[in-house]
Image 1 (cartoon, rainbow, N blue to C red):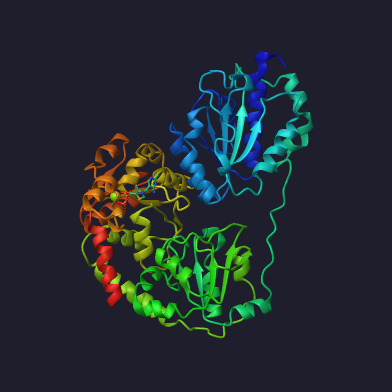
Image 2 (cartoon, rainbow, N blue to C red):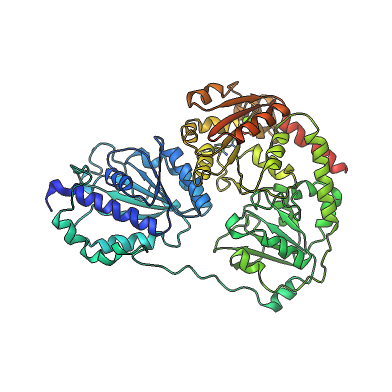
Amino acid sequence: MQINSHAELNLLWGSLILEELARLGAQHVCMAPGSRSTPLTLAAARQDKLKQHLHFDERGLGFMALGLAKASRAPVAIITTSGTAVANLYPAIVEAWLTQVPLVVLSGDRPPELLACGANQAILQPAIFGQYAKQLNLPTPDLAIAPQALLTQIDEAVANQSMPVHINCMYRESLYPSSLDAPRSQAIEHYLQPLASWQQASTPYNQYAAVGMGQVPSWDTMARFVHGKGVIIAGTLDSADNPQKLVELASKLGWPLLTDAQSQLRQHPAAIGNVDQLLLNPKGRALLQQADRALVFGGRLLSKRLISYLEQQNWHQYWQVLPQQMRLDPSHKPKQIWLAELQQIAALEWPRSSSANWALELTAQNEALNELFVRQIDNGEFGEAQVIRAIAATRTGEQQLFIGNSLPVRLYDMFAPISCCAAITYTNRGASGIDGLLASACGVANHKGQATTLVLGDLSALHDLNSLALARQAQGPLVIVILNNDGGNIFNILPVPDEQVRAHYYRLSHGLEFGYAAAMFGLPYNRVEDFQGFMDAYSEALNYNGASVIEVCVSQTQASDQIASIGQWVKQS
Ligand SMILES: Cc1ncc(C[n+]2csc(CCOP(=O)(O)OP(=O)(O)O)c2C)c(N)n1
Ligand SMILES: [Mg+2]
């Protein structure tokens, strides 16, 4: 092929890659501008199967892709140019790796002869994500390489994938075709001939069967397992796993269902959602300590009390159900791990436990705590927990909630109200970064334009401030609630030995407000300092078809003081 027609073959390879990704289930492509990725960019512009999302900052772009992938439960393509653009995806890739999200990075790169020789914007891209991504290094497009070889590589790398994939795409110039709709050259027509039937089809070139699940326990094994006082623990679960099935399982067995903030069941009326505070209460703890069997679904528990309860109990039998082989227990307890879907295990013919209803008292204790929270939080002083409870109580089935790290997610885990119709809850709790939360929530919201509330801290919001540019693209209600307590106030509840050290090195007070930031990005903004003000602003924001910002101004110690004072009440009740 002539050197000046590289552009046509480059673009063709870009088109083949994106078409195959769409056939492998991807619904979205996230793109940042740059020259070296031109064959991918132009291919994305020409296709109509992947919804396009554009952003100038690759760091936020990666997190938006993460949110889109979580909401669509499918691979999401990310296109970046060469150089530090790729490196900026790192935090999102780490979070995706830890939480099994298949982001697919397509990075434009220079050809081999231009690497490590002082050529502009050339860095070492292959393996840049280390073990956090599966690596596929494509050669520069070449007519000597059959297009089938390209497709089969993409299929093998992406099908059934549960971790990020980095496809490095080297391109030799020229990158820009003279026209976007010029007819294909004869050479390219000839090159594509082996793909004639693939072009007519809509399935991937090579189709991999879904990975089969392992064995489930036999009836006898289950009968021995349920012969005792057990607890069912719902850890981090995807709404697509149908966690509600655990409610049925719990009533079938007669065992209590203890739920983490990320289980989708934290607010379920039939669950023991207040388990963190129950473990602080002497009666609740004493009852839970009678348990000798644990049936844990998923992992990544949030509550330190629940984690240490699991660690300290002397379990007669400990089962964990995971969708794939991994270690998800920082206590390293001896256990039986079943590799299966939650629904598969829940649907088994479980015998009823010989100790069914052994912990019935927990339900009353769980409700008593909720009443305590109503008195102490809902009817108490204005503050962070009150706002989070109000948001959690207002949710309808259609409204998604994204909860930021640091205090917001802990307050939700500790104090969320019991509610009949809580909708899907999202978090970034793999690496638990305070970065990229705005962008991730934008991704979750943008998948279908579904109403979404994000609640996050002030440092977290500052960290990701330029993602307000993504928020302004929201097509449905996206309410960004910033809990501004003037710094990182989770450090108030950590045992830093000196108050000056705490303030100077940890909390980093800034005295900043977010009104001008919202204005810069053209977003409606409300600053609230009392509950009525918040509720008015919140209902207005939920009815507004786009993103808006509510800044909740609270004192530096309000949330940490309230956590401590409620802890005292719980210990005494
Ligand atoms: C990227 C990243 N850097 C640092 C941390 C450590 N860290 C955890 S919480 C926190 C403070 C967060 O402050 P803010 O968002 O205001 O929440 P608050 O503690 O006030 O609830 C920090 C710095 C982190 N988790 N992630
Ligand atoms: Mg803060």
